[in-house]
Image 1 (cartoon, rainbow, N blue to C red):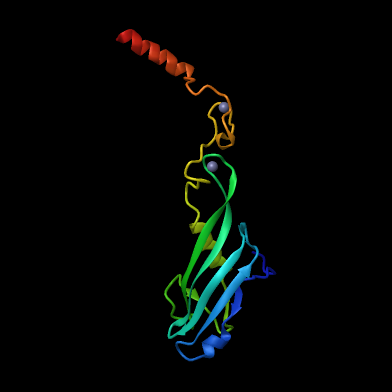
Image 2 (image 1 turned 180 degrees about the horizontal axis):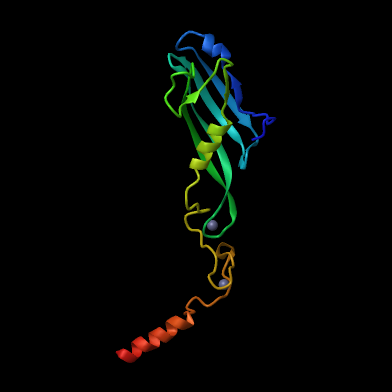
Length: 172
Ligand SMILES: [Zn+2]
Ligand SMILES: [Zn+2]
């Protein structure tokens, strides 16, 4: 992210830092699409609550989106539905916050882009598949078997295996 990058998930919670403990504000997001570095989220919508606590500003809520992902079986790009659970305390003042914790300075500005990006990427499984019964690609010709049969012989046996099979037969 360049220094001139304008985050669309930048919020000013200065008013909440000044407010009494327990004061909260609901924020609704409804972006048709949003780009955070290499991550495209389409759409990004949902609501979250920002609450002033004794430790800082606590954000909690649920966002909904889809993220383009490649199916490991058929290699087609699909839009994976994801749910982003926001549950983060931004310590104020930053001084004295636990190491690695999120903080909010006197400016009251929180940029949620890094957090939303990280949480969105965590929602993508290691082995994403476009649907449970995805047929994948033909091992012979690479045809996408979800689009129908390619005509390759199903019982084609690897020539090396067929030699082995003959050897085994000879031993019987
Ligand atoms: Zn697939
Ligand atoms: Zn084939």
